[in-house]
View 1 (cartoon, rainbow, N blue to C red):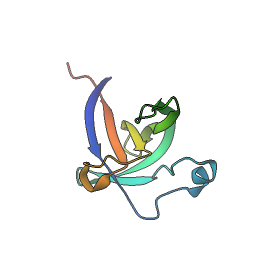
View 2 (cartoon, rainbow, N blue to C red):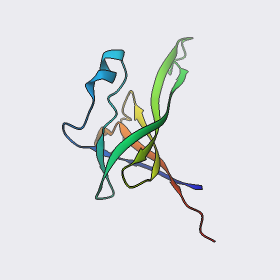
View 3 (cartoon, rainbow, N blue to C red):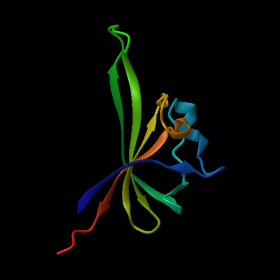
Length: 108
């Protein structure tokens, strides 16, 4: 399998969230989302992790920056998504959910 770098925002569909994660202080991973004019459904979370980083104003604090998820979609694709805790100020529509990579089958 090869990973294809994407780094584009996705659009979670309304009502496609499981709110239980939010009670733990985590973002609610969308069960359905649109990317590149195609709708995808999440059927399995294969892995989840968090990314931290130092305070951007020079302090010694460490902050939670991103929540990462490796998922399998209904059509069998493996995708890596992430949620930015603080949207980039110059990002399109201040997107917070992003598609990072898609695993593709090698072609020989």
